[in-house]
Image (cartoon, rainbow, N blue to C red; front, top):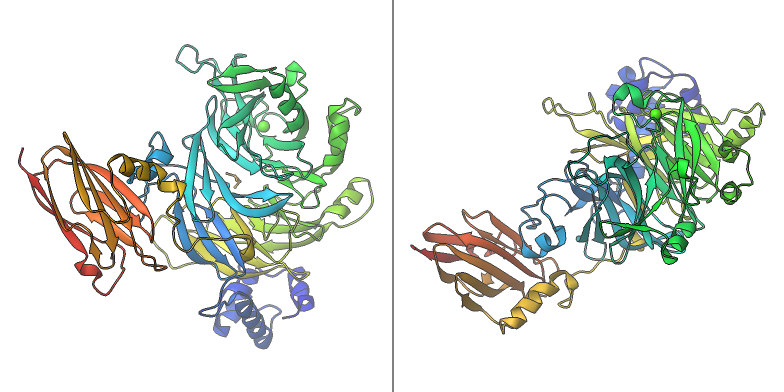
Length: 628
Ligand code: RUQ
Ligand code: CUA
Ligand code: CA
C-alpha cells in the first residue's frame, strides 16, 4: 500500500482495531472483518500485509540493523533485542537473581550487587554518549524498588556496578549527560522523606522532608552531588550543551494522597544548572549528607541551581529533541505537551526573563494522557496518548507557529496502538543521529492481541515504521513484565567481546584470592583447606571438570572456583551442585566462583548446566560430605 492510500484510510476513520489489524494480522481472510467492511480491497490488504512483513523480516542467518535494550521493569533485568525482527537476543540480569548465569548466586555478582535484595524495578535504560552520540560503552538503568542505579558494560553485556543512592527513596527518571560526554548519570528521587529518616519524625510537610536530584559519576559510579528540590521528581533528560538537565514534577502540592496530587492546575519542570552546581561543589559550598555533597535547590530558597517552570498538570515524560532545541514535558492529566526552548534558559537563570513561562514556546493539544515523546530527526515528535490508546505524530515547528496564533494544524497523524501506551522510543532518538526509521510503542495492555494466557497478560511492544509520511504498525511483540522503556542504537555502535579476557576486572577479586592461595587458575586443580573453609579450584574444558570428586565435612563452607579454559567461542560451561541451590555460568576464559555450606551429609553430584559438547551430559563430578 502506498503512503497516499494509507493516509486516505487513516483520514477515512477506520475502526481502531481495524487499522492496526492492517499491519499485524497475517492472512487475507482476516481482512474483511478487521476493516469492518471498510475501504480496503482484498488486493490492497494483501499488498499492505506483504510490505509490512518484508520490512521486519530478517531472514535466517541475517543480522538485525539495530540493537534494542529493553528494561525488564519489576522483573529486574535488561533484555537485548534485534530490531526490526524484535527477536530476543539475550537477557542481562541486573537487580534480579538469575539461575542460568548465577547472577545473585556467584561471589562475583554478589560483590557487584552489594546489599542483596531479591528484586528490582528498572525503568529507564540509557546508553553512554560522547558528544551527543551513543558510544556503546555502558548502559545505565534505575531501580525504583530499592533506590539503586546499575551500569552494564556493553562489551560483555554484564552488569559491572550497582550503586545505592542515599538520602532519597525510589530512583525513577534516569538520563545521561550527552555533552561533552556522559560524565554524569542524572537520577530522580521520587518520594520525599524526612532527614534524617531515623524514625524521629514522620512529618512529611516539615522543612526537613524532601527528595533530591542526584548526579552519579558514570566512571566511578559514586554519587557526585545531590540537589534538594521542592515537590517530587518524575522523569528527566539532559541537553546538548552539557549545562542543563530538566525533570518533571507531578507533586508540586507536596500531597500525600491521590486527590491532593491533582489539586494544582500546573506543576513544574525543574531545570538544573549543572555548571552552577559543579562550581558550588568545587568551591565547597555544600553540606555533606550521608557522604554526599548536597546543595539546596528549593524554590523558596531562591536557588542559583534550579528554576521551576510551571507546566500543566501532573506532567510525566521529559524529552529533549535531537536538534538540542527543546525540552518537552508530557501533560498526562492535561491533553498538552509543553515545549520549553533551551536557548532561553541562560536568560532565565540570569534573571532576564519576567516569568518562567517565557521559556515556553508551544503547548500543543494532542489528546488524552500524553506520557512520552520521541523524535524522528526530521522535526516531528511522536507522543503516546495513554487514555486514547494512540500514538500522535505532530510537527514541532508548526506547534510553535500555532502557539503564536497562526492557524496551522500541527497534528500529522494519530495511530491506534494496543493498548494504553506508556513509553515510546524512536531509533537513535536520544542522540544527534536520530534517524526516523522505527519507533517502538510500549503498550501496557495487550487484551485481545495474543493467545490468552490466564489473568496475567503480557505487555505489547509494537514496532512502527516511521520512515515514510505515514506511520504503520509492522509488528506486535508480546513481552513479560514490564518493559517500561527501551533504547535502540545502530549495530555498529556496539562492540562486544567473543570470549573473556583473562585480565577482565569482572573476576579480578577471585583471581587475587587464587593468587593468595598459590593457585594458577588456568592450570591448577587444587583443594585448599582452611579450618572450616574449603576452597576447591578447578578448570573446565569440554566435556570435563578438572576435579571429578572432592570430600568435605558437614558444616564446611565450600567455595568452588572454576576457570573455563576453553578458547572456542560459544563453549560456555555451567556448574550446578545438586540439592544446594548452586548454579553458575562459566563462559570461555571466564572464572566464576560460588560459596555455599555443605550442611547435609552424603554424596552430591555436580554437573555442567550449559550444553557444551556431545558428552555434555557426562560432564559431572561428586562431592562427598562426611557426617560431622
Ligand atoms: S515512566 S510510562 Cu517509569 Cu518511564 Cu513513563
Ligand atoms: Cu560443559 Cu556442558
Ligand atoms: Ca500535581
